[in-house]
Image (cartoon, rainbow over all chains, first blue to last red; front, side, top):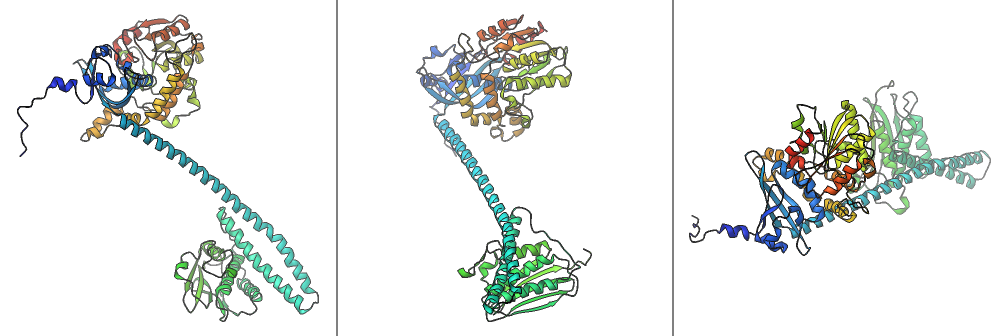
Length: 382
Length: 244
């Protein structure tokens, strides 16, 4: 059980009013002070009789007075009270005293105002805290705006860069075609063995470079929102395209064995040059990363409503950690510096697969690393 | 009879006055953009950077309602908004009632608006710094009435709602405007209601408006403060009755 309060202590209500730990003010219906407690007089440095007859607004700074007249006084009259209004009182010496004010009207039966009672609490610390909070908000707003501006800048720069890559890739094609045509013309004339070898090497390099440019262009287009575009044709055979890619890469790597097995018995509704680009990327990858002692296999077949094409090589398996990012652009894994390309080959190959509503998957073990493309055959009429 | 509220409140400002005229007039109350139940998305900082933007809204409202020879009742800054509207759309209003008007709040040479430019600057800063306390005042005070939140909503949220950011703009427009030259162009019979002790619009300011508007009638109310429409509605009503 709680101890009852001591019977000998009686609260002195007069003293409670005068010396309460807050300021009390009473205003007549015209807004004039007719009663004020000692605490508030003490805070402001006035004698009680100096305060009587003043308007409440006279105790405020000009801005606070305007705010009070335009916002707080109407609110008080309409709802009969206001709570937690932040105001600055001005002392006799001119010092500012931040307070939080609550007020309530005392109304007669007919709704008219008898008086208005105000309670004022010191709020210097709270005001400082609020001001710091406001300053922090303003600062975070301005740093957010700065970050946004930087981001916008970066985006613009990045888009410009991608446009530059697209234009550059496009412009590189013409001089490359001239070199290729030149090499072809020279090959037609009689020449010694060294010259022939050099010319063949040039042809291979041109082919490889065209492939790289195609990848770069496709990538840039994809980034700029164009994506991979297809021109499908089910009526023309796919096999010759695949054979040509195998031949080109065999020429480029004369000491390597490429075993191919093509059994395409149904029409494949695909973009033939895109398919060639995909096989070229996969085959190029297998030749670069696969073991030089073992052959690279390319197999393509139509079976059971599906077209499947896979490229496999022997050699070190792809590390497990690298598998997840294999098809990301500019991913190069842990390869010798001399083998580094742009890292776009597999990315573009997987984009081509997606554009055909197909999949490109990979399995990699100690025996074999195999990339498999599969797409549904939807008949020649699609 | 069209009622326009001033800076700091909304159409609730007229709740004790407007009903008294409902039998003789069709009364129209509205909130300026940014106040009360107005559509905040309609706020256009450029349009509302001068009082003319607000006056255009009044004219638009009048045209929509087909007002012809109506009574315009404007409090505080809306007194000047009504002055501008009456000049721009002659015939729309046959009477202007200006409650606590001021043509310019900032002192200018011999003209005493009641405030220095520095004091108005201080007010604008005050509004900026009191953003937090201010929005808290506008927001429903649910915390104190946890058991009856609908009551708190009704009590503290239904009067004088203003959007803090728009209110800051409105304060700047209101207290930095100067419409002294416009007053002479007023052709509409005008009643000016002046409070006895109004720190926002002093008697001097009210008399200036009275002298500048040709043929205007000037009534000094016994009411004090800036909002006689709330503190002394009966006095306002009877002064208006004898004019309209």
